[in-house]
Amino acid sequence: MTNETRSKPQPKLVWPFLAWNFGWTWGFMLLAIILKNLWPENPPILYLALEGLLTSLSMFGPVIASLIVLKIKGFKAICSFIFSSKKGTWLYLLLFSGGLAVIFALASGGKLVDGALLSFIGSFIYLMTLAGGMEEPGWRGFLQPALEKKFSMFIASSITGLAWACWHIPLWFYDRFYDRSQNPFLVFIIGCIIQSIWFAALHKKTKSVLACMIFHALLDILIETFVGINLADKFDFSQVNSLFYLGGLGILTLYSIYLWYRADKEEKNA
Image (cartoon, rainbow, N blue to C red; front, side, top):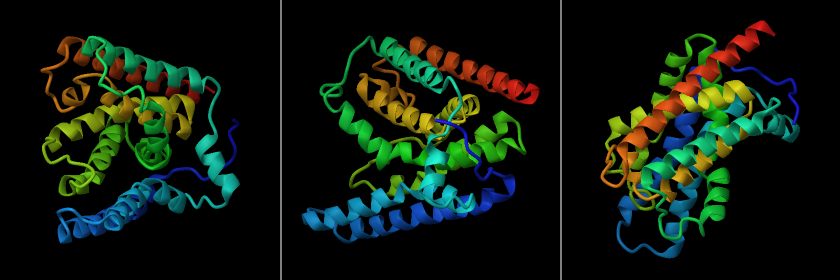
């Protein structure tokens, strides 16, 4: 993959991006919420399929918004936006993904959720095409680098994490396929901000939207693969070793900060 000329993220495009992103996602989710409340119990298959279609379409808000504000048109331009990267991208993707897997494995004592490995490939394909991975062209392909042109990495990551968390708010009102009603929203915000630091470093070093998409998909899968990690993600450490969990994530976060600033220095000296 090679870098090709494409439109650059700019701070002045942040508000249009957020408007398109939230408008698209929240619009489709509002329709799904209305349908769910109109027929809350035992709806027919076609009714469920329509709700599923609406929730799936809602996931494309970030990528649609980024393509619109960056005026990326045509198959070749979209492929360049998604697939371009710097040398060494896959090494850093392996470092982040492998590091996270080791942290979760140590924290959970190596215990796997029943059937998690069997569903790994299917879950990965779903997350890359219809769920979490599809968010990354927006959050890291546009918003994070746009904010970094105006703010420090910490502030840019915090704003991105807050926007990312708030974008998920409809899921707290829709429990047909997802149920986040028991998830403390403040904890979710903190998690999104911390994860935004990881993604900021990965994107800064690799300039790869695809690497961020893959890491997002693997992150979501790994949380559901190891016993207790899903609960720990909500600050319930009853099934994990909190020292390994918090210590490991702390090390990953510190490394991400170091990597971002090292990559920034390399860019300025180039």
